[in-house]
Image (cartoon, rainbow, N blue to C red):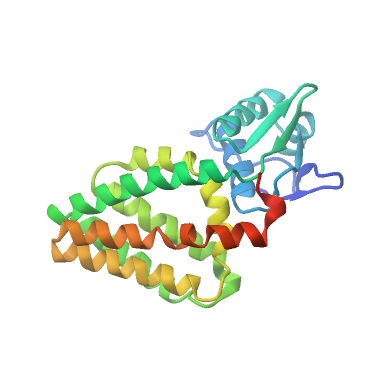
Length: 241
């Protein structure tokens, strides 16, 4: 997929012309995924203006897929649209962060509890493999994006282990505000290491067969960014509503 950047005036543009097509994925889904990725990574900052006609030209698609993508992003709470086809990236909403975190903790703690009480070896093996890859990246700030992708893969593997992959996709789609806060927190010194150690502790608890310990470790693993939320807001006031 082509890289994107914020153009003069806060508009988004695509370099290289269009998006890579996929016969099995609708154009609207590709546009949605790319814009969402840019928003949660804070490449597109809050209050960036997106013009639908320019987006369509940039992606080399009609306005229909762009309109559908924008509607999905509005449902996610990541953009808000106004008359005359103007769309703006929303500021990070603290209330939404807390709701998204509540949902994520509830689902992930149940997933690891089930894994601990009825171990699915394949999921654990995959999760351990992901952790080994993360170990090679810890401390390398230039590899933060790859580290974050592996983090997402780790949690996806756990959901897959309890046959809840679709639930993981739904939770991810509804966690855009939380993901933006995690983007702000990840470059912090020691954060990559703490994430890695959290993953190791969750795996160890699952392998011990102790469901209570597995949920305890997962809850602790997911709490770090939320504990720092007041400081993150103080350091990035312009990004929050």
